[in-house]
Amino acid sequence: MTVARGVAVLLVAALSGCGAGDGGFDLALPLDAYDLSAAERRVVDEVRFRLLADCTRTYGVELKPSPPSARGPEEHRNAAYLGWLGDRQVEIYGYAGPPSPPVIDYTTYPVSDEQIVVLEGKRGKFHGRAVPAGGCLRRTEAILDQGSVDLLGSKAARVREEQDFFLLANDASGQASADPRVRRAEQVWSDCMKDEGFDYPYAGAAVADPRWARTAKSGQPRKVTAAEIATATADVACRDTTGYYAARRAAYRDSQQRIIADNRARLDRIKTINRVQLENARRYLAGELVATW
Image (cartoon, rainbow, N blue to C red):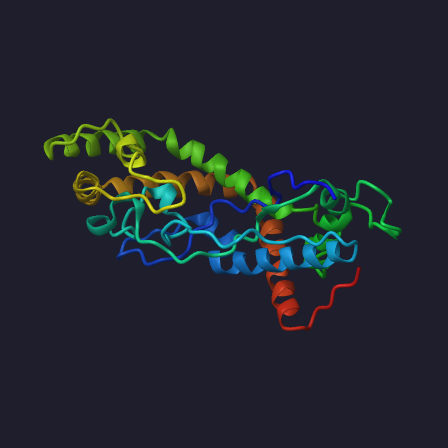
């Protein structure tokens, strides 16, 4: 038996938020229309893993999910883009946010050398059984993408084509970060914080202050100090009163609109693939879609 070679992040779905309340501020952005919600993505991710596990099981090397682990606070999908701290209850939890129950992350799990062979189809046969072209990964995607060809103008989806969304979202984020409105907002926020007795050049520096990280212990929730709570409380007040959120939202809205205008056909395909995968995942969970290996 081969030894597991660490954790393989095969199916990244970063940037998804958890859809918590927004406290009255509009956190919606244009690219939201082309993405799945966090809850919908969790459905697809779980079914994708279950299909991969079913496929690898037929070769005697079944995938197992990683143990449930703690996650960060539930936040709106665009919280990171907009610098939104409204879901973290900073007056109680500081920048760490309220604890969430442990959950299984179906996108990250240990993978052995033998499992990689079956997942990626590195051999034509494994333990006497024929391995499909592209392995269990490609076969799983074909099941999730089932029925999408006609909707995509007869041009079949590439394997994990829907993840192009994150490349485009990152492009938009880069443009927004360089927007003069964001730079001005950071300076005004910094001036506000100085008036409150805190010296940070930009908002991210307060969140990432190394003093907070030093309160963490391996495998345990980090201790939130009075100093962190005082800083975070002043931080949120300055973001609220200086128009920080509005400036970032305007910059991100405009950058995403430009990305959409330049990539509308590509994004339309991504939206279609996402909706087809979600529908097939729901059908699988309802027993209406049966996978064969």
